[in-house]
Image (cartoon, rainbow, N blue to C red; front, side):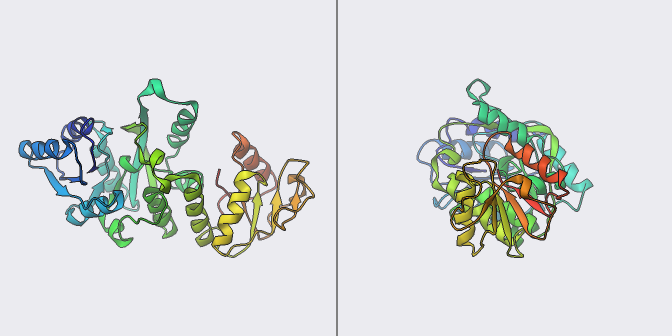
Length: 326
């Protein structure tokens, strides 16, 4: 649990962890160069409960803090937690039991409840609903390029797997999303339990709102990197979406050395007019799969379901023959 200037909420986070029904754990609380009372609160918790071990973080950001904690972990399972979230009492018990029951899983997350509820936007509510519908490894794999399919502070991962990939990496994009994509690329199954086991705090100071590593452009670069390593490894690509998202994807794929053979769009004003040297055609022009992987990149709400329905009707197989990223 990395903590930097988390005085306002770290006490509640600690209480939720130390009150778990599963008690056989050690908490690596990484005080990452806090300048408020966070360090004192962590030290006090360590005096009261021997399971708490305070680690001095290097003050170089979340990846360095996470890796400082991982270096000292001795258990075969590593649970993530943020200093402003709240774990439900049965969280660790449920996740440990699932990983013991299913040794093939590299990690397991859970459903979450974003809070405070009264401040949730419609967009966050839709995001929460999408997240909480992802359960099986097949779900995770299918949805992995849309958004991060597991909530980082709600996840337990096998320590050996974390160490195999070198922990967390600061590559200018979200470290948690990159971890899941890396594990999936290496063939490791991930899943989510169908119970809410974490209350996930939203607020103006979240890294997703303040760090350029979580910007839409950085996330798209990350997606393009793993698309090129995975579904597009054969080197051929069709993009569905000649709008803002599709054009940004073309540029991001170009950085990965990946060209686009064809663009698909429903806008009559775009059909028949090449974009960045690529022909734009209507969906009706698509036949069955012809060996070229299609990436659906349309950000309009509801478009993903329509694209999936159209392609499935033409016999395209999601995952093997087409991938949705928006």
